[in-house]
Amino acid sequence: MKKINLPEIFHNKNFCLLLFSQLCSNVAAAIILFSIINIVFLEVGSSSVIALITILYYLPGTFLGILAGTIVDKVNKRKVFFISIELLQNIYHHAQKIDFDGDKKSYFHFVINKVNDKYYKISAGNFVNRHKCNTLISRIEQLNILSEIEVKQLYKSVLNNNEFSEKGGGGLGMIDIKRKSEENIEYNHIFFDDNLYFFNFSVFLENKN
Image 1 (cartoon, rainbow, N blue to C red):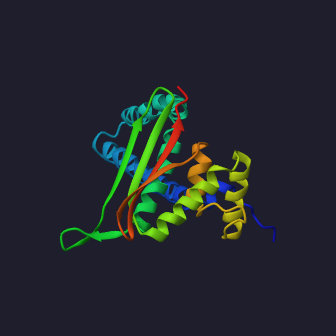
Image 2: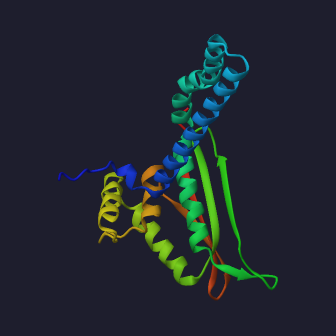
Image 3: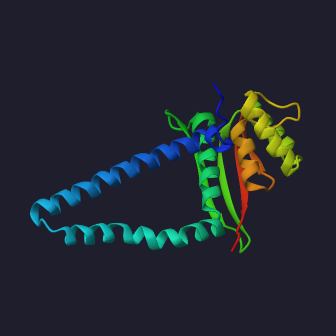
């Protein structure tokens, strides 16, 4: 039996989750439309009214769909979305919980802003221990010296082999951030105590307007 090679995007867990969510949304929308048509048919019994309702239901999506692709491409919303998901997942899984008031909590920040007419900036930060801080610095520095082609090759290598390349890099999520942004990942870290730092990522996306 011939093996089916899925496109690279289908190996991305976040994309598959988004695709499944969209599928559920479409099914729900179809059920709603069917329910509306059924109610109208039982109450009115007019095929003309049913046709009009169907047209009105799809009309907004028809007009908005024409503009959606152009708008999304210009402001990089897809890239903003995927990079934001990666950064928030990183916070969720790796943020160091600290005790400020007798209760251990994860403290973090997440900001998206337009720097100028050319760039958007996504910033995310959380507390990490010293070992994690040093590991993040090493991985980011290794990623930042790679060319765009090398980043893509590293991404495919880690994706296919589930291991780190000899060239370095970080986990798949960080490599994907570098790959999508096409810019160096900036960072800074603030010393808090002997084994605790606040580590901040800054990712820049070019505005295509």
